[in-house]
Image (cartoon, rainbow, N blue to C red):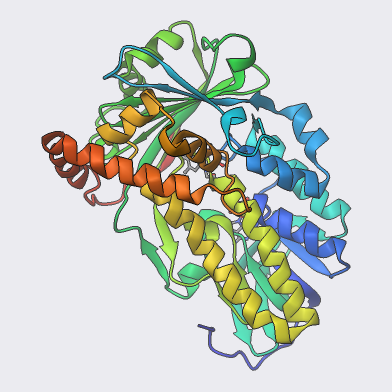
Length: 445
Ligand SMILES: Cc1cc2nc3c(=O)[nH]c(=O)nc-3n(C[C@H](O)[C@H](O)[C@H](O)COP(=O)(O)OP(=O)(O)OC[C@H]3O[C@@H](n4cnc5c(N)ncnc54)[C@H](O)[C@@H]3O)c2cc1C
């Protein structure tokens, strides 16, 4: 799909590649292309450092940061995360998995990061590699033609018209192009919303486990507990939209009541204080676009799709899409004969990971999968396969897929063996994901 051709190609400024959005996806592709000598312009509507949710990274992300030469900088701001702790109201024990148990032993940890700091590192890196990086500059309109696009940018002082040979949409959940092309679809199989804030004084795990993410299930979904390096802990409830919609109280009070529904978390927050008394809420965010590229554009990261934060895949998939997207852009500009095949591979890779992760995401509140996480056994190597997937090792050559298939077979067998429980859970999920008029987003103190 391409927008109607714009015959007026007069512009104030020109570039090879124009990137919309200076989050992980946009800053990564801007750096990669600038490094190859492309004239890249990167527009970010906010000013770094700016708040963003999505603080838990995956081990597979570390390799991408290595390739950008940023491991040391992220190590300095990050909290090392060696694994995941699971807490279930239906089990009287805690469960831990460690990334060192994955098939590929070369990526034993990741980091928890403040996104304001992490995203600024990536953005400044793009500029250091030669991209012209602008903050406080919002891309408003894009008109495509056969040779590229004409783009209206609202900068702080004036509106500018840019001419580019290629446009990369990395605008995150603003989904600039998917909105313009009207190709953004709600995920018909999932529906989810979140309420979150930062706390000081939360009780953390001891020693090396301190930086682990904890997932705690409760009646309306699950909580994340993400320890950051400066002692702050990020707490968020990912809940079914009907639950958030039921809110009759101010956001902070509602969040406190929600925390009280999860005794395992309440205990850890007994002496904790909400930073600035500030709580954020975000509405149904499970969607995808029906296309991810065209001859003169790509959609990366959340600008293409987002499903659910439970396995902390968002930043990794955004950066990974930038790495494969950079090959498509480069081929379009330098070797057009190769571009079509690379675009096909890019489109397939954009669908691949959300599809594979969705299988578990859709079942993560299901009692069978919860039992798997709470009592992880390793028949046919399924545990190693699952941990490899949770580490983000899904694009390489590690042989995880036979084990993941086996995990699915075991899931279906155990579910059949507990037919009544499975049926009840299936019916409950249908009720949980029902559509409610959009939940009001916002922050309040
Ligand atoms: C509740 C919740 C919890 C999450 N937790 C995690 C987690 O723990 N780990 C994880 O990996 N992921 C998590 N995610 C997902 C993660 O936040 C995203 O997947 C990730 O930020 C995507 O990166 P991106 O670069 O595609 O988009 P973004 O990070 O959203 O960056 C897009 C950038 O584009 C800018 N922009 C938008 N429109 C324009 C425009 N028109 N002009 C100029 N600039 C523009 C924005 O200001 C923004 O800076 C979570 C998501 C949610 C909703």
